[in-house]
Length: 173
Image 1 (cartoon, rainbow, N blue to C red):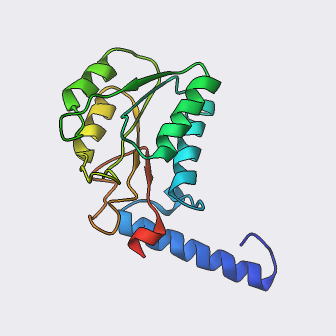
Image 2: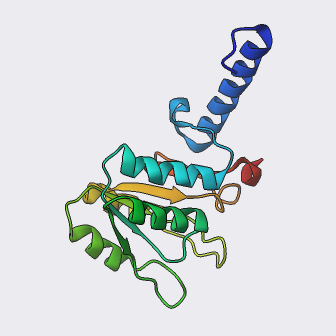
């Protein structure tokens, strides 16, 4: 789509139209949409770039995240000098929001919170607004793998501000 010939220009136009349509669907700006091959690649890209390019030295996540997140965090922890903290879960696998708040309150290091919107195995639903608000209060970045929720729930990034959110086209056509 970056070619200057006629077919390349047409491809670019189609990609940009898709980007605008997707942005409209999520109430985002089209320049905020980045295309990858899929959700796992997007999660990896976000987590790795948060550490390498944004100076994140601390990640808070849960032990029941998708492997695209868990494995990337494990690699980042061994490759870079970052600390990883696991938020507590209740008996049904839901996030303990008070524990998340306590973890955020423990340090002023540049922090990324990475929690999935809907768990792909047990179906738990994260309160995106609550986590967004906590992250804003503690000046932490927020990443949500939201692949499982797309197509089932409306997503409005203005109402639930996240620094990074991942969707996959196969879930919302």
